[in-house]
Amino acid sequence: MTARLFIFVGHPSETSLSHSLADAYQRGAESEGAEVRRMNLHEMAFDPDLTHGYIKRKDLELSLEEWREHITWCSHMCWVYPQWWGGMPAKMKGVIDRAFLPGFAMNYHEKGPFWDRLLKGRSADVIMTSDTPLFFDVLRHGRPGIKLVKNKIMDYSGIKPVRTLQVGPVKSAKDEKIQSWLRKAYNRGADAGRR
Image (tube, rainbow, N blue to C red):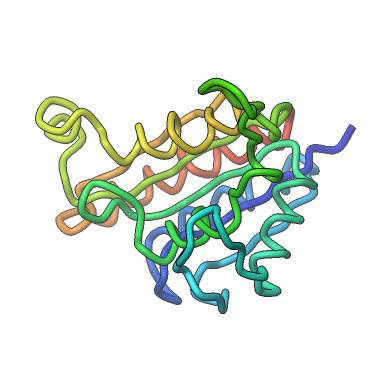
């Protein structure tokens, strides 16, 4: 069976290391025969504000409907984005706020604190860039960006296992280091393409 992969580039700029890492991941997946769909945050037009929470719903814009369609279609996803201020860019968070709603990502039980995870059966890779050295992010901050996406978003909705790759510091990286990150992304993609 052909692997169905959805790559989501969560960098709001048109050009970035996130895009290059996603390109490498996609090449690796396609080299193993995977069917790949991709969306780039900078091309998505939507209101990122979940103004009324879950009380009153806004209609989803076309790009959010397409994003959800890709999530439903895929067996494996890869999110590639920068860590800014310990989390994802605001516009990327807006995609999650607006699209990962009850009835799609999870359903709360009427009584009690529990919920159903509606996206079970899917796995993910998360590739995150950072200017914070990894050891410092682990020791000083406890990897907040990874914890947020892995535990509070993906696991909460049933997506697992989730493999993570955090690269950085980006601002001081020499070309040789960037090439090693691109090779890692390619290999992750190839591995996902073989599933």
